[in-house]
Length: 123
Image (cartoon, rainbow, N blue to C red; front, side, top):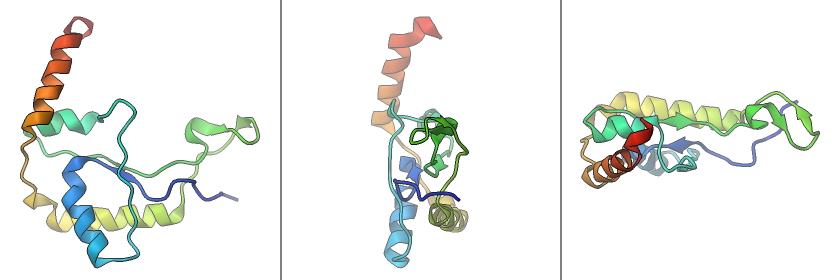
């Protein structure tokens, strides 16, 4: 039997902020969590700063990468059903209104380009 995840909600990229905030105002049962990847970006970030519309949505996993830390053995990954339901609500919101997003992440683009220049020798 799957246990509930310790973290409720799901993480989203900055491009979705307006959509999930509007949804949370309309639907009090909608829960979300904005979380950055450990490095501060995801694959969608680079697409966003160069003019493509992209975003990232995920749900927290129990037994991430099949690591059951309590039993100290391999275990199945699982998600909380409510997290999945809220993710579907956000997908519907984005399908209805996400096309109105206006890209433009100049400060973020500058940070990304600075990082690319610094790490160019590794690319």
